[in-house]
Image 1 (cartoon, rainbow, N blue to C red):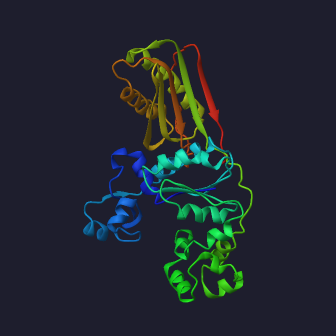
Image 2 (image 1 turned 90 degrees about the horizontal axis):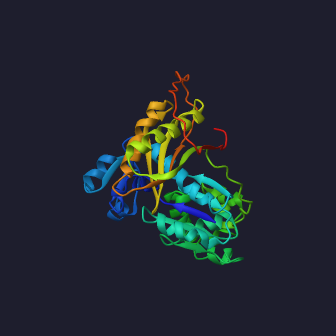
Image 3 (image 1 turned 90 degrees about the vertical axis):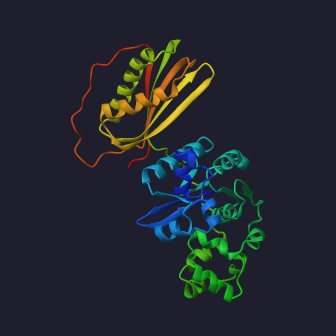
Length: 351
């Protein structure tokens, strides 16, 4: 199975700022458009344009600079959601992933929900390359399943233009048309040497035409996170009852950093009516206790309101990394002591 979220940097921006949802949006880097959501592309915005050209032609489009932190953390959230369905995940690039999932339809609700923030598709087939093409050909928000043993028949319906997102250039697509090769299946009788002699992307054309990539999907190792929580023996409501506990679990989480930095902090409270959760992306990598305490406090205060009774409070740190600079002075003020406070560290892959 293959998951494809088009123009992922634009999708990530819409997820981090819900007010952008549905608005025409482009992401630029070094003065050029690198991603644009469906609404912007419908107007005519194209990747590779200069920012000046895009803004001159379409002033109504929201223009945002590329933020690697926003994109990375949004992708981590996507992969975490996929990991709840299956441990067999291979990340191709932010916005694209291979999965080994049974039943295949288990991913359909996620695809529909994610499509609200930008074009999201999924495809399932016997092999990797056909699954990817099935995703690229799917309608937005839809899981496109190719029946078992039906790869050849499916490729006969896929125009070669659908190979553009996998790296086949416009000049090559035009030349394929000159040769009379309009469908991917028409390339199957050609050898890899023949395609490589005619086209710079010959190896790519051969791989997708042969639909021969059938290797097992590797097991995914989740990125490391730190989670600390406190369960109240009796529900509390007033901020002065919650603040000392917040200080304790923030310090506990900070101690688990062990010299690393974090780029994302999430506060979650369990109430009598359900869970309230809010995430904050930090402006700078944080390794200092005070740098964690202030965003944790303000995030918690934004969750509290009239009639909110808290049963459980939790903090999670993500986007962990070892800073390139020498670790600064450690500061550990005396902590308060409460019953039933726990810490959990989930290790991930090195680096």
